[in-house]
Structure formats: C-alpha cells, structure tokens
Image 1 (cartoon, rainbow, N blue to C red):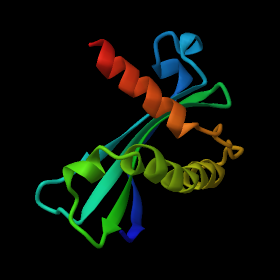
Image 2 (cartoon, helix red, strand yellow):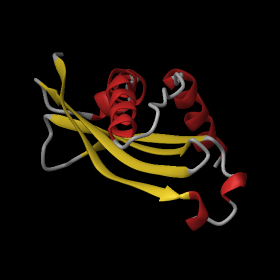
Image 3 (cartoon, one colour):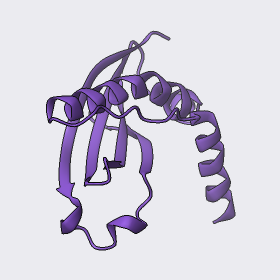
Image 4 (cartoon, helix red, strand yellow):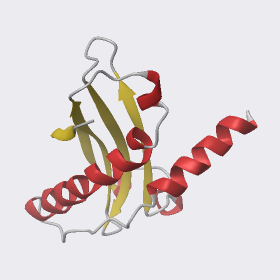
Length: 135
C-alpha cells in the first residue's frame, strides 16, 4: 500500500504570558499527546492530530494543536486502522515537521528556538494499549 504524507498544518496555537496562568511553575516543561483520526467521508486519507504544551523560556506557555494528513492509494479498512502504521509510524513521520514548525514559530516570534525532545511512539502506543486493556 502506498501511503504519503500529504499536508501539515497548525490548527491552533496560543502563546500565553506566565502571569496569565495560575500555578505556572507547577506545569511540566513539555506535555504531548496525539491520536490518529479517521474520517468516514474520506476513506483514502487519515490524519494524525497532535496536542502540545510547552514552556517557553519560563516566561510563556505555548499551547498548540497540529495535524498531519496522510493519503493512501487504497481505502482505509479496519485492518489498517488497527495496524501500527497510523499509531506509530505515521506520527513518527509527521513529528519532525511539527518540531521544525515550533522551532521556526518561536524564532520568528523573537524567542530562542526550542528543540522538542524525541518521542518514542512505539512505547507511547504500548502504554495507550495497556490503559485500554485496564479499563
């Protein structure tokens, strides 16, 4: 099956000053989540939706939603949805684009660029599976 990263876009972002956030100092430096999203109307593509929370220079908090769209040559089916590709491989392919976007955004906004940490998507997927099985 031929799969291609087709598009990336920031769905929303907000840079909030420290003094506008209660208990800013208690927030972690970096918060991250992602999920694949499958649309019934377009069966030849899917998206990976990312949410990021990042402290910027201990003066601001960046909140961002970002999505990457993948196109397929065959229709998405349950076998594909339940495979590792949309949960592990696709986010790993898209994440460097997100990292570059955040770095460039902060640089152009007058801040030093921040390099996001590496993410082990395989380990995150295993954690999510384990949580589902617990429930």
